[in-house]
Length: 214
Image 1 (cartoon, rainbow, N blue to C red):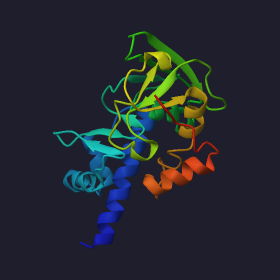
Image 2 (image 1 turned 30 degrees about the vertical axis):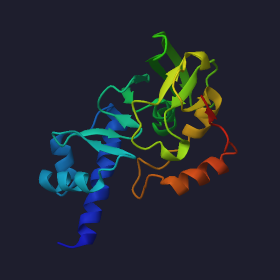
Image 3 (image 1 turned 60 degrees about the vertical axis):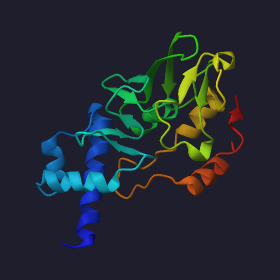
Image 4 (image 1 turned 90 degrees about the vertical axis):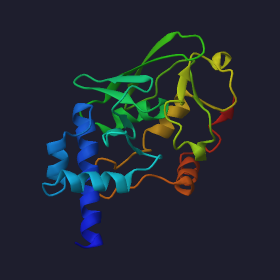
């Protein structure tokens, strides 16, 4: 068995994970994973462990996929509801990215609760324009260090509700930065952005200073 075979299985398994999340809001079943790895669930699990990375793919203690960013298999503070499917969003950024990835859901309702005051919030996030509102997205790390911070990247009612040091992003800037962040993740050949690629993405977006200290 060659290393090239391993890499081919990795990519087939990754695509199966992403397409299951996008179409049904949950990770693939064990038989579906096995099918992606030439009929072997053991090979599929090996592929998942090779790919596991805090930037984008998490496994739980049972070797189940807990997150394949932007999709989560467990609640992390955001319910993302389309016309046909509901997803758990990995964070504020991930939740805003989902309608840009799922071709049949150009509009979703992102529901969450302000961690500061507990007020519920529901935003219609469309593919063609950002939502309006006073909410701000809070990030406990700098833009280049966002990996591993999912579940902590939340939406607050306003800046006045944020009482921890970190970075803040308005809804317009969040939408523009999220919309192409995961472009291509449902297709073969996708690779998550590292810190250098993230810095290039922010600069190319025309919003290199979109984050502000809170």
